[in-house]
Length: 316
Image (tube, rainbow, N blue to C red):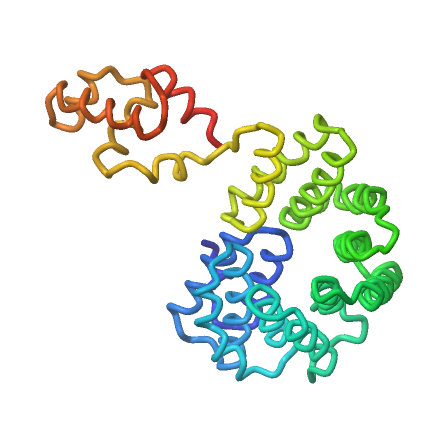
């Protein structure tokens, strides 16, 4: 972890905030935990870090960790803290409560006039949609889109287009999503890109275009898996299952079902070692290695060493 990510100053928070915007959630979490462990930052920076940490936990689907941070974040009246609590409400409470909290961001003492630095209109529009308030959601999405066109970055505009497409009353979503994805060419915004890819893939499946949908879903799956974005990853995998496609799982995810001893044997097998070589490396008998392999095959639903190696080698 670069030293700038753990320095107790506002620059460290800005760096971590930028990582989250770029979709580097795991690295941001590492930096935030380092800041928390140092416990040297000013109080204002600590609460800013907690608000950002709350949003990272939500991105990874860890509601319990996010909820545990809520009381501390609620002590901060700034825009990012209000937005973090709105995101938590959207994930756990009645959508009308979430709408109220999103709208309150505009009244925060440090709120920017355009509402792009902390994109509260996006969250509010989606919460309104879930509450059955589509006309209001669409109007808010149009306002965000207009502001992003005039003042925003390509990522700001891509987000605005995603929300606009989702809230449109006519259902013509795909063109906006394609434009949004094109705006992200050359832009590091992995999470937003994966969200757009998953949205578009769902639409393509409805109109019978599975090949492009599969390409989009595999790309989204790769990013979501690498950053442990479980809500997004599971949404994409449900679409893959609907297509009859198996998910690609990271080695750590595949091996998680094994015991520590079985994992050691599996990792050495992946290196191409013979049973005797594995036994010598671990200081056990060849028979013990064979017993471990039998259990590994059963747990991972494979039938032989070549299929085990193939299964682990093709994991994301």
